Length: 588
Image (cartoon, rainbow, N blue to C red; front, side, top):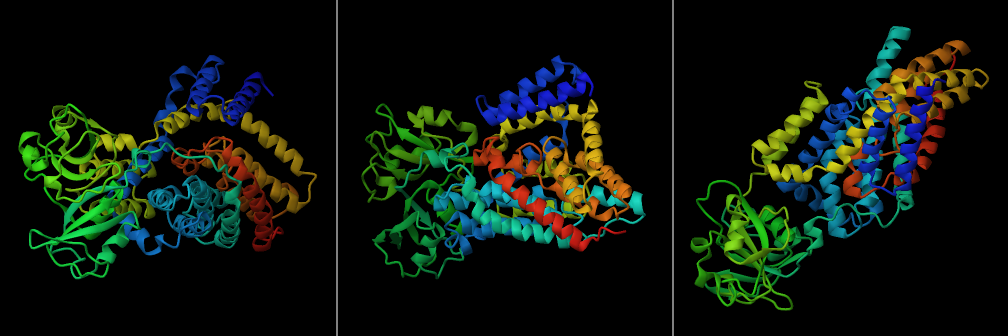
């Protein structure tokens, strides 16, 4: 072993130890490791920032933006609503979400499948207060297992198929992976439905303003237009959209007649519903029932924001009402809802006399924010990503997602380019503002990946991977054939967290085939072992982009992944070996 190879092993080992120790933030550790690699001469200075141009970094950032666009569309509520009430526990959520992600991952890139279900998971966790961290890591692992079932599910399968062509003259077919991959996926999902309890219970992602400042007693007035599908339905049907987080406390008909409706009342066109609930719940009602807030700004070009602000003692709002102040003319804002601590708003919103400390939900032109609030003497409570009022049709982000998935399914463009184009489309079509897109990206994760890609690359550039392969080949000579299959799979599992899984296959596949040749056995079970091992990356958040994607939203630490990943890897190691030798005979 050369000095450079020793330093490369030492650097990677120290990085892993620091990340597990969790004394410093993971992105700080990654940057320090990158600087150490340059200082030691392992990474050329001109290549120090090559990680920022890596496809994985672009894929992760773009997938998060696409996911945010889908979450903003309202289509998530439509998908979750029929089953949301039943998915009230982490076990049920894992069964439904992980099963769905695994199935879709067999048909398309697993990172794309995971990006679709990420906002659904966050929505369910928020509604049932179950904690997204209990579900996100199992869902990422399920996406990896699902990718093992078909040729197109994950990159290692495609590369192994190409290596087989070079060795025996014929590639693996589309569903040659299915018997092994399906068995691993089914057993793996059963384990995840129980094994999620191994995860720390105190993890949480960066709390959004929506969660931190949950205001449950907003009063708002919404008109039911004749075009809404809820005309002719009941009050209970509307309340069901909010999953118990908003109620209809009043109903106004014939312009001024106010009623306290029973839940069985039938709604008619132009009814004004007086609603009480948190702002996100009101947002779901607006989207689900196509309600129209009263007093929304009309004829305003550009984006409209729904913002929350507190009335200060010096504000001209204090002691006056919307009608007296003429908010739209004087301040260029529109009142959507009012919240007052310890008191229910009983009057029409335009007649409510504002008090110091009242919390207002206002519609403000983006170009006037925050100047409009400063002029009104209001203090913004928090920046929440709300869409109450003008919004893009749900089919726009859904259409973008469908086109993206079709491009990926038929391999019409590279993965990174496809996701970047989808993220750009979310912004260009107005689904997300530029600020929203930047807000959706987990920048510490991006720094972590970009800094560690050159560091992990030193294992290959210094020849350290060749040292590993030589040791494996020597160890395999004295083992039984079945144990050799297990060894090759275990080695691929151990290497892939620190190498790109495609690089792992390129290194390990020839080793596996060489071991088979030395033992006089068929190369197929050994190649299949490499594919399973390289695709089973459950030990770190940096080896596969699916694991990285959930790290920020789940609030995971580096050391959390082995807690669930090690037992799952051992199950796959034992089960995978048995399935491989049953389906692919060792004798040639």
